Each structure stands twice: as C-alpha cells, then as structure tokens.
Image 1 (cartoon, rainbow, N blue to C red):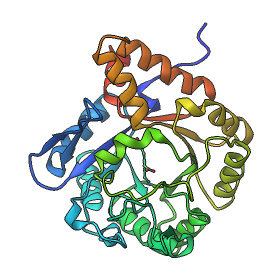
Image 2: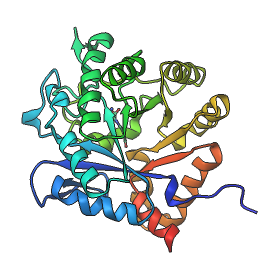
Image 3: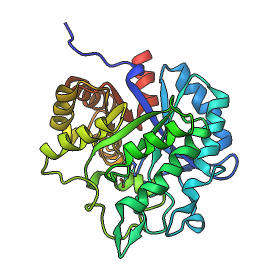
Image 4: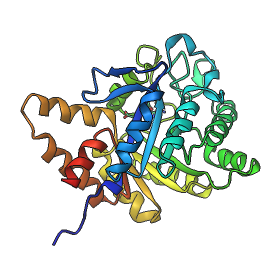
Length: 307
Ligand code: PBG
C-alpha cells in the first residue's frame, strides 16, 4: 500500500576531493565522511555504481595556499575538480558526474563570487562562472550545478556551453538555496569555514520566504535549467513540495551537511536510530515530491536498500 518508494536510483553521493595520493582525511563535523585523493576515487565510483547509485557530486577541498581573492583556480582546466572528473569518468563512464559551479572552495574570503567593495558582485562573478562551467564540462562532467545564486547565471552558462558545442551538458540549478546555518560542516569539509567573512545573505535566500523561491525557480527554468534543487532539505519540505507541484520539473533536494551531522551525532550517542531516522527523513523528501536526493549517507542508504 506504500504510495512512495525509496531506491538507490534516487540517490546522489556528494564527495570531497583533496590533492595527493593515498590520502583519506576524516571530517570532524561530518562523521563517516572523508576527503579523498583522486587515486582513491575509481574504487569509490565503482562501489557507488555497484550499489545502484546513478551519480556523484564532486566538491574540491582546496588548500589555503591555492585560494585567492579572485578564486582563479576555479577556471584551471587542470584544477582538482577537473582532474577528479576525468578520473571518475575513466573508472565508471556510466556514472553521472555533477560538479558545483561557484567560487567558494577557491576564494580566500569563502564567498561564492567576486567581492567588489566588500559585497559579492553579481555580473562580474557570472563571467568567471561561465569559464568554470566550461572547464568542468570539457573535463567530462555531465551536469553543471550552479550553486552560487547569482541572478542570470543559468542563462549565461547555457549560452556559453551551447556556443562551445556542449549542448549535451545539463544544468542542475540550485534554484531555491537558502542562507542556512546548516551548511557549517560543509564549509569545514571544503576548508572555507575559517575564511568566510560575513555571511551569504546578500545572494542566498531568506528562510522566511517561499514566494521568492517560486520566482527564483521560474527564472532558472526560463533561462534553461534542466533540473532544479531545493536546499537545505528537511527545514524546507514545504518549498520542495511547492516547487514540484508548481513546475512539474525534475526536482532535487539536498540533505545538507548540518542535517546529516545532526542525525549522525544523535545516533552516535544512541539517542536516535541511524537507519530508521535516515530512511524516514529521505522518505519525507520523496513524499514532498523529490525526484532525487543528494545525501552524504548515499552509500549507507543504498546498502540498506539492497539488503
Ligand atoms: C557552495 C555550496 C555550499 C553547499 C553546497 N555548495 C555551501 C554554501 O553555500 O555555503 C552546502 C552543502 C552542505 O552543507 O552540505 N556554493
């Protein structure tokens, strides 16, 4: 009688990548998640594929000495994210590779764009994001995912890809992305936490708003987004539901780092049942209308569902 079902096919696994070889670094605030060097990614890709997970999302953790105010490493065709994408594609060609388009892993100030007079500047940032999307697409990424929340970036990236003959590359727009306190552990993971000056409220959304989310999504779709994302997940189930029922487009949800960490921390203390709360949370996303879920627990969940 179940109206909704959860399957490994619903899951996208976010992974953190570091320089070096044979390196695995635990992330204190994300227990069970590691940063891995590129040589360890092929095994991970094959494991994900064997479990039925259709796609990975790659996040580079850039060393502080390679970050700069203009985030120049973001457009380097031999940068960490591009090399990771190539390694993943070689190892598991049928596995989808998604990569964020945003400058925050690369900027010394931790913001997603370029600063002008202390504020993130929308239009000059878009010029860099276009270049970033192009190097990622040429490295073998299947889906570029602008997570920066600049206005007009989806259309600009679509045009840039099309002009370069990259029509087949899809865009997953972080369309309704809230300025959330639940991103803390992620910023640890990509080493931008200490660096971040101020907050991201001039470009990410106010948690008080849902009509604004609908306007953001409508713009991204009109500009050519193939898929939409709502983020974070659990605190914004109403937004997810409204986006799905308003647009009937492929709609994804991100169970962000703080959501994962909160469940995991309670489970590690024996206060919550990890497997049961995880599955219940993810089923909530399906019920609300998600077509796919990004979760750091994707491997765990897929193993559970395959049992
Ligand atoms: C950056 C980005 C963030 C996340 C994904 N891409 C953080 C932020 O906007 O500060 C957060 C994901 C998570 O918390 O798991 N553009």
